[in-house]
Each structure stands twice: as C-alpha cells, then as structure tokens.
Length: 447
Image (spheres, rainbow, N blue to C red):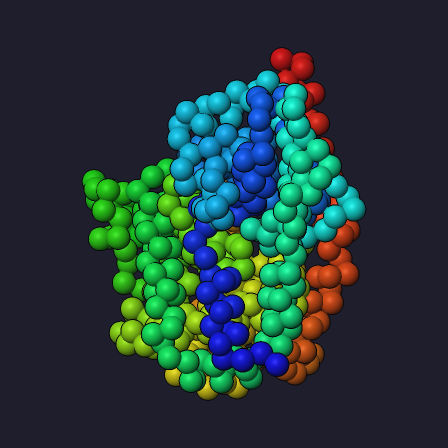
C-alpha cells in the first residue's frame, strides 16, 4: 500500500526540470551515455526508436537550435551532452557542439530507424567507431537508461528503480490523493513553487523571443487595439499581461510551449517526463492562486493536487500515448488544482475533472511540435470552463459518451480506448510523417 512518504518521493522524482522537449532530450541522453566508452572518432550513429517516439522527435527543435528532428538532438547529445545531468543533459552544450553536430547529420553519419516491435518510451543509441560499438537503451521513462554495452558486453544494467516506482503508482487513487493533500506538510513540497517560477520564466522567454509558433506573442498582442500596441510589449511582456485569469493563462501557457518547442535554453518543470504536461498542470494553477490571492500554503497544496491528479490519469494510460496527455492528464490536474483554490469539495472536484477530460479524450498526440501550444491552450481553457461548470453543480455522467458515473470509471473508459487504439493510431501517424518526408525528398530532386 502506498504511504504518505511514497507520494512525496513520487512527486520529487516525477517533477523534475527538463531542458528542451523530453523527446529530443531522451535521444540526446541515450547518445550522451555512450560517450564515456568511446576511444576513437565516431563513424556512424544509429538511433532506433519506437513508433510513438518517432513522432515525438519529428517536428520539435533541440535547445540552442531551431533545427527539428531526432538526428540533430542525438548528435548534440553525443558531442556536447553530460548524461549525469539527466533531463538537463544538454545544459553544457556550446554553439561549437551544435555546429559539429549539424555537420555530422549533414554528412549522413546519423541514421534514424523506427523499431515497430517496441512501444511507448524507447530509444536505442548505437555508436560505431573503428574500436568499438557502444549501445545504450533507454526505456519506460524519458531518463530511464536501463542498459549500456560495449562490443556486446553489458557494462551497465538497471531496471529496478522503474519497477519500484511503477509498483507505488498502481496504488494511487483520488481518495488517497485527497487525503495526502489535506495532511501533507507543505514544507516538503517547496520545490513545486520553484517549478511554477521555472515555467513562468520559460513563458516570459517565449514572449520576449520569436520561438516556435509565436502563439503566446500573438495572444498578448491581440489584447491591444492595432494602433495601441506598446512599443516595448515584447521587451517587458509580463508588465502588459491582461487582468483576466483566462486570457493570462492562455498567453503564458502558449508562450511557454512556444519557447520549449522552439529551442529556448530555459528549462521547464516536467511532469512524469514531459515538460508540456508540467507547464499545463502548473502554470494555470499558479496563476489562479495569484489571481485569487491564495496563501503560499494553499498554492502549494493546489499545485501538489494538480500534479498528483495528472499522475493518476497518466498512470492508467501510460507515459506515452496516441492521445494528447496535455489534454487528458494535465488538464485533469489543472482542473483539480483550481477547484481546490476555489474551495470546492471533493465531489465537485471529481465532477470538474470529468468535465475537463471527457470532451478532450479524442485529441490525438501527433508528435511534439510548435503546434503543441494550440493544444495546451485548449486544454487550459477547458480546465477553467470545467471548474466554472462544476461550481454550478454541472457534471457529465453515464450517458455522456466516455464519461461515466465516477471519475475512476471515466478514466478507465478513456484508458481502455487509448490503450486498444494506440498501436494503430501511432502506426498511422508515423506513416503520415514518412509520407511527408518522401514527398519532400521527391520535391527536392525535381528542383
């Protein structure tokens, strides 16, 4: 049975800073883990990924560059990454590392393969020199290095920590979460406030600079009449944020995604290995706490509730899914956290979470990309609307599609659909990516 201390440990382990999108970060980490065993120049690096992870790296930039793709992320990790930093593996990378990595990719010394036999989070980096072949396998978690071998001899093996975490997670339920939130000493969870500040700084970077889709900047600019846009709007963006919570959430959540997907060097506080989910679960709750003049203790409890409700949903569906987990899991968290700040009881919170995840259940995860900002904006706005409806006693139920009488039954229904459709949906989405790439190559040949 999961204990109070187990839950605190889970929060500490699963809420961690991550530099860049955790898809490219995982490729970089796997490649960087090979580096200590290399004794000669690299001839070739092969990166094998599950279909789910192929789509994750296709359209998102690696920090320090606007270049999207799996190859460049892995090459930068190999040449400049430090695997001991985990999800911040790319922190020590320099412009020179990035330049050399780009050359390595341009020379065709990085090859990407989809391994159809693997599912979920899976990366295998194979680095070949004249002296050795080093293989690192990352599985289950975005920082879950489980094996390193050199010339066929395994030098490192560790799957125990992941299994231990998963065993604890199985027992996490809404009842246990609510009890924990009521009794936890908030001094144990100060790092969640740091996570809020971290994601807010990332959002500010997304407003100051033209990262990704520029959606946060567009939302901010739209709050002013065309001829009354301040000259220093994007130099001091936080100064010009609107007063209304919904617009403020939309701007900052979108901007944080713009920055993270577009190559910002600012980290995000990630949730269960995903920075966008951490942004969507944390920023709306922190902004709501400030808007409602909540106490520091109330804010911490609300942030913890948001994270744990995200965990509850994601544990069922899995760490990698064909459905957008910002829409399903992170919106569930944001909804619960905001409800807590508004003083809603447990029954209302459960109803609000159902109101949030039910209409978003069919949103596909078609990879990490600049357009994630749009989905995160929708998820955040839906969370706010779900809270508003729950305040009026409105709750979807048995006759409302994937929704059911209870939150647990609703999550079970969505989980069943997500798990049974995942392989097919991932295959179709990966095929669409490959067709786009083939079309691009054919077009280049005709020019």
